[in-house]
Length: 267
Image (cartoon, rainbow, N blue to C red; front, top):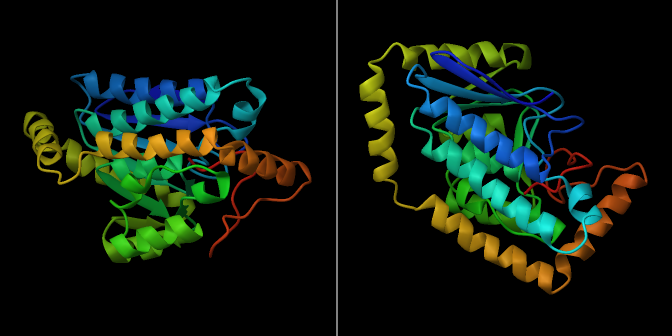
């Protein structure tokens, strides 16, 4: 369990952090390093980023954040998410995100910065940040859905399905969950068959023509999370979230779609 890298022409980075893949501070940095290590390997032609368990990613570990005195965990989570999202975007080779179940907050940051997204038919995507007293990853959600839907999702915390994202063109393939890995590997294999030098230059060139600097844009968003925390909104909403989870209920995203996992804040 944890973050594992399986090397090869098609490298796999696998997240397995029970119960819901809500990553602690160290987990985000481990994930960033695994993706960067895969990209640095000249033998790697494409990376598949996937997860085990109930869902792809439930954001940061709220319980760790609230159990840590001061702002150390908050700063660590923000820096860790920044590092992991950047590692996916800047990976020297294409990254395919294979998403199943819930993909919330931090998961959206990873999937939104991936080159290609494939998803299971039970996958759903959302940003519950507003309900957690935080902001962030709208930069990455804007790469998955149209502008007005992105705004509605941020304000209402509603979710969208993999089928909806396929209709927008941001999810390439939707497959049954038991076929998700095979689907991702099939797409990866088609890329791996190409000239690796050309593919690496293609990745570099596509990043170079992006209209939005995802690093700068996301860092700007993170500043508002710090402001919300300084004003007390962060702790208030995170404490309420943990209290709800501790009472045996799942704190819902506050919009349309399934309820959020209990441990993650979605960011």
